[in-house]
Length: 126
Picture 1 (cartoon, rainbow, N blue to C red):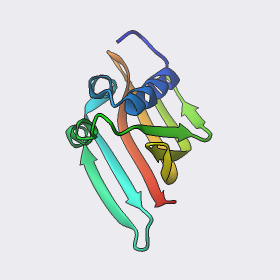
Picture 2 (picture 1 turned 120 degrees about the vertical axis):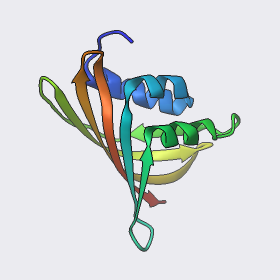
Picture 3 (picture 1 turned 120 degrees about the horizontal axis):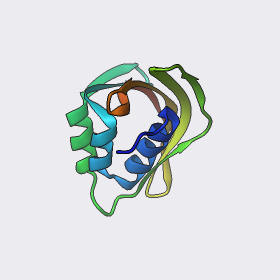
Picture 4 (picture 1 turned 60 degrees about the horizontal axis):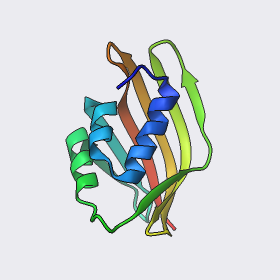
């Protein structure tokens, strides 16, 4: 992976997600990355996932299933070694809106470049 800005890594994350490219996702996330999801259907439910759990979930999506996460807008706070992005989104499965929510992605600048260290998101069924 070449030296990139934090924003380029975030863009690469969504390109890899939409392509279900688990190798690229693995490369741009720290090994101990965490993902926390708040499901907002009735009772609020918190789900936690490790990087490996996330990668395994992407691998388990059938080849014929198309996914697309559309970023609605983006706010960023970027310092020399820490960056955080907040992005409302809409998530589609096979062209049909599945859910909406907001992502918060935190990146750290390591010796290897910018890497995603944490993702939190909300999910509300459409």
